[in-house]
Amino acid sequence: TASAKPAAPPKKTKSAARPAPPPPASSEPPPPAVPPRVTLHVWSPEKATGFEPEERVEAAMEEVLVAEPRLRFTPFANIVAPADEPFQALTVADQALADAKKAYADMDVERAKQLLQTALKTYQKHLPALASRPDGVSPMRDGFIELSKARFFEGNLDGSRDALRYAFVLDGTVRWNKTFPPQMKKTVVEARLLYDTLGVGKLIIDSDPPGATVWLNGQKLPERTPTQSIDAPNGPNFISYARRGYAPMTQAFEVAGGNDEARPLATLSRYAKNPLAPIDRARARIEDSPAPRTLKDACAMLNVDMLVLVKSARPGERDDETPQTLTAYLYDARNFRIINRLEMHVEGDVQATARVMARELFHGTRLDGVYFAPVAASQPKWHERLWSSVNTDLGRFRHWKGFWYVVGGVAGAVVVGTVVGVTASHQRQIAVDTVLLGGH
Image (cartoon, rainbow, N blue to C red):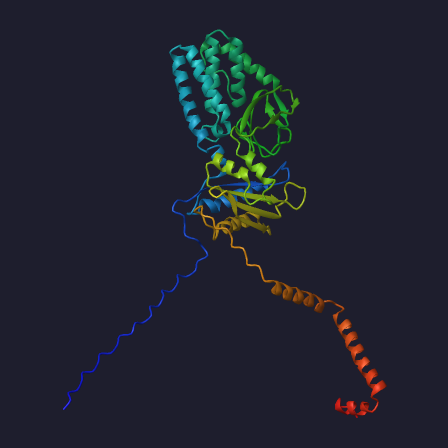
């Protein structure tokens, strides 16, 4: 008998490997390995002479950008004029004042004068920051008093009285007291008597360009330039100016007293290395060119990777009107182009609109400096373009208000022509055609 053959083992079939499901799509690109350095500048095409809503727009957008972990944001003003720079300089001036007092106590009058002049020059340059400290302008007042003493002991009586005039303006309570050397009593009393006799004057403070914030002897005024007429003590008054885009400055202006009115005018200057110059040149072509060349120079001067520019357009000519439209441009210096543009209409609170704009401008935007050019759409073939054109023309014709009049007239003409032709040549067929159409 034939032995049974063992059953063949079943063939192994290879199952097709199923591809892994794609990761869920995300509208937000991955965060950059190193957050880019970013700053912001807001401008208005109109000439601002008074209240500037650009400052409110800038402040609102800064709130959002500072809190964004994907960015290293620094306010524009802090780049061109670091916020801690005045206070560091004032600390050095305080030490110079202390050293001057010690040199005067050691009767090293010449060294005391040099240290005092250094300290007083720094105090004047950063007077608003000095006035914001707990002791206010008292260090500057003390510096002029010490300078008056040093000049007195070197025999310069006129210079001693002149230094006292500065001290009286900064602190109207300064009079003869035991802090002065006894030999100076006559000089101090006579200088104070003249100061009290001349009384106060009037000032209308202005600047070119206008719209600057003003401090008088360290006290911030409620109005921007040009101000209303205000009282000022006789003697050398310190007027400080600060305006967006311009270097702050402080100058001494002589007030005659006797209620005479004067109109000091300060010409404000740009920063020494002015990053706004290339920005201003780019603004003229920012709508026409996606890669304004001068913005690269501005970013190099500011030491940033990305620059946010916001144009604030007002509906009318009044400077205190709320902007009607905000247009933001995001420029990336690493690929030399504007990578995002956003326009928003202001409805209600301009600061709320600015916060939304700051978030939306960076939403879904690559921040790693990599740029992908948009893919151009493929052109349709000639017969597709022809059919699309026909459909477009027919669609316009169907929506024309005279469409049914024309169609109705043409249809009527066709029907009438048919009936007339039948009547003329086939009179016998009329009755049959009528029955077929459902007539009687």
